[in-house]
Image 1 (cartoon, rainbow, N blue to C red):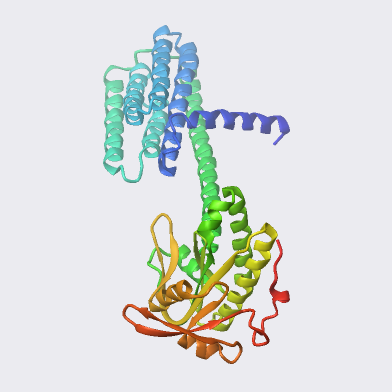
Image 2 (cartoon, rainbow, N blue to C red):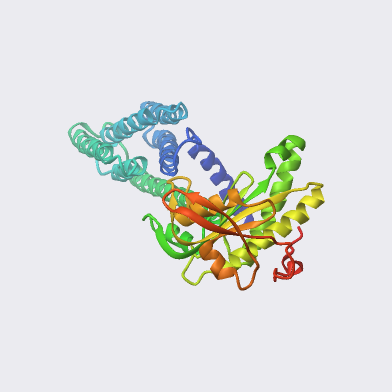
Length: 432
């Protein structure tokens, strides 16, 4: 295809695309937009067909009435576009169906049946199928029935009273083939434009799907995301060996009153971004953040997930990272962290905004441990202590009461407590 031909096709597509968008709004769904787009193309192409009949048919018939009626129908078809622009899509479709059937009857009476009018009948039956949604079965059936009745009436009236206009055999043949060619051309144009529109909508939906997947990748484990994306079934799992962490910045409320919102937001963004990078390095799943609180876990993605050791190392790196970032901002911020291990359940909740979360006594205990921890220290449950005590030093801490579990023994670890801390912070430091 030459450059000039490509330029012409591009301009035609732009013009037809502009016509196709008449009456569409941002609130319309994809199917509604496609229906309006198809209907607008049908209205416009029927308008062109009427202009063709007015000019070409008027010349062959040498009848001003033929040309005037065709021009009148062209005005009606343009009125369908106007109704759609006024958000009267239903009225536009009804007017169009009545006009296109009247047009067919008019042609049969003037030139007689089987003189090229059958091409118009093909055009008539294709158009309603493009203008009704899958759920509008009754409306589609009624429109097709209307077209069938219009076709039968047109052929019958053409046989009974037509043709009112006399043509030479040569003119009949010219009109027959010209009408067929123009109708086929219009059908091809509709198919090409709808194909381009549907392809564009598909590509747009794929982009939106990828954006959603990208967002969900940051909010849930990869195996869970795979289940969510491939089916609509509820995602729920039970985990026998889960470790849960809650972390909270001490004195954050007072900090809010001392610094500007912009500076505080910048501080939190840098800190939590660093936490996310550390979580990924240690094989820890970030569950969520609420204000200045950070929740993470291991053992919720798969049976071969990282364990409580990884989560505890992550907790230590969080304390170090907080100190590094807060010093850069001139803050004296410290963090309380609670870690517990045991059974938990996980799942995805929500319809339009899906959220991955975990529940259970292990989760509740980790939250209570964080609230009871001393600033700058990590408080763990007894089962967690027995799994970590060979690597890290712990001191007995006050027991806490937990509803349904009674009194729970706890153990505290001070990250700055000397040689028992085996984590090399210089290896896990992450600067932005």
